[in-house]
Image 1: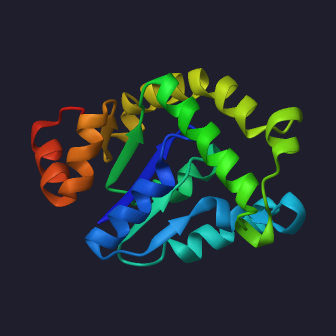
Image 2: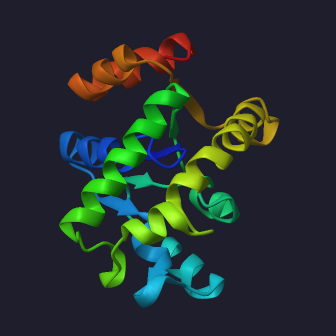
Amino acid sequence: MKINVVGSSGSGKSTLAQHLARELALPYIELDALFWQPNWTPAPDPAFLAHIKRALSASGWVLDGNYDRTRPIKWANVEVVIWLDLPAWRILFQVLKRTLWRSLKGEVLWAGNRETLRKALFSRDSILLWAITSLGPIRRRYQAIMSDPSCSHIHFVRVQTQQALTALRADPRTFLTAASKTKALA
């Protein structure tokens, strides 16, 4: 199975993708880990895209992340795209909680980078500002993509409630099988 978990910052992509990878015994691939270099330097696109191609050469995987420019590579063979589209208040609460936790604990992220309260709260590069301003555009983009004929080979699962997320986490195989048979969105 080849799964891509997408959604806005703070929606729970990484948490869900890691859980699915464990439950389904598939490799977990995190796009942020392939993109960010030391000192929050983005990887140049040729290197970033090459890393993705290598990572996706496995027979199955759970991929975490959006990065629109990677879509032709990551969705060429994807089977399921799980879109975490939870309520805005929940997403903003989660990103705030996560950012505060990471900043206060000095958690090491990709390539040795760390979030800081100053950058998170008082910077043009604020993850909180990004979460607030990108939520609407991300929703519009994925709604359009789901109806795009060029993506008809992909089974989309749109998770909009905590109940659906809980069901997916509790029994991923059954949830994904049921969702694919009904063609319904969660």
